[in-house]
Image (tube, rainbow, N blue to C red; front, side, top):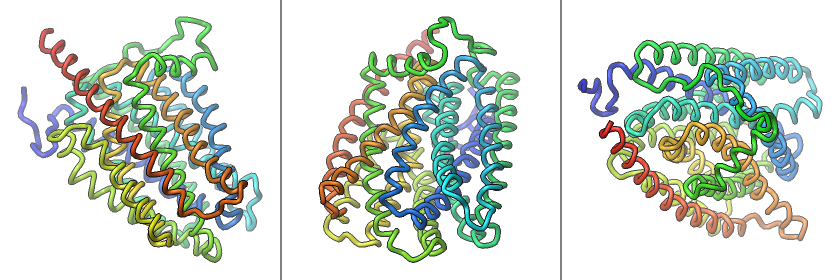
Length: 436
C-alpha cells in the first residue's frame, strides 16, 4: 500500500483528484445555497413576515414529496452521473427564469414564493445527490479517511458564499446572484464528468454497477418506485435510526429558526433584514469552517461516529437553554449560529457516513425518502407546532425551547444506536474484504 500524501488527511495519490473534485462539488452546492438562502429568506420575511414563512415551509413539504418521486424515478432510469446532469440543467434553467422575474421593480407574489421554494429545493436535491454519489463510490475505509476533507468543501463553500453575499449584495443584487448560481450548477455537471472519467481510468473508487439503471419491475416506476425507499427504511432498524436522527433534528431546527425569525422580522425593511440575516449566517459558516478543518477528521478517526453525532445535540441543547433564560435577538442568533455551524460540518459529514456500509439502493432510494420526504415532513412538524400554539393563543416563542430540548435528547439517543451499528457493519465489511 502506498504511503499517504498527507498524513493529516490520510488520502492516497490516486484518490487525490477525486477528493479535490468532490470538494469542489460540495463547495459550489453549499455556496449557492447559502447565498440564495439568506436572500430569499430576507425577501420573504420583509414582505410577508415570520408567520407567513411557516406556511411557505409547509409548501416545501409538498415540493419535497414531488422531488422524492422525481429523484427516485431518475435514479431508476439513469446512470448515477446522468442523474446529476439532469438536476444541473433543471436548476440552471430555473435560476435564469427567476433572474428575469425578480429583476422587475416590484416582484410579484409568484416569483417571491417561487424563489423561496426553489432555494430549499436546491438543498433538497443537490445535497442528497452529492452524498448519495459520494457514498456510492466510496468504501468504509475511504469514508473515515476522506469524508472529513471532502465535507470541508461544503463548509468552506458556505462561508465563501455568505461572504460573497455580504460584500456584493448591493452591487449585483438578487438578479446577479441568480445568474452566477446558474453558471455554478453547470460547473457541477463538468465536475461529475471528470470524477467518472478518473474512476474509470484508475479504479480506486467504485464504478457504477450498470451504465444504465433499468427498472426491473415495471410496478416500481414513477410514484411506486419512490416508496421503495420507505419500504427499505421500515424493514431496517439501522436505516430507521438514521431517519430518526434526521427527523428529530429538523423538528428542533425549525423551532429554533422560527424563534430567530420572529425576532429578526421586527427589523425595519428588506435591506436591513437581509443584511442582518447575512451577518448571522456569515458567523455560522465561519464556525462550520473551523469545526470542519480542526475537529471532524480528528473526531471521526480517533473518537468514532457516536461522539461526532453528539456535538450538534449538545450545542442545540445549550443554546436552547440560553434562549429559555434570555429570549433576546442576540441569543436567538446564537441558536442559528450553533445549529448551522455544526449541522453543515460535523453533523452532516457523520450522519451521511452512516450510509457507507449499506447497499446501493439504500444509498439512493432510502436516502431520497429520508433526505427529501422525511426531512420535509419533520420540518412540517416543527412548523405546525408554533402554528397550532399560535392559533391556541400562545404567542410566547420563549417556551418553544422546551420542545427543542426534548427533540435533541431523542436525537442523541438515536445517534448512540446508529453509531454502534455502523461500527458493527464496518467491522463485518472489513473482515469480508480481508478474507477476499
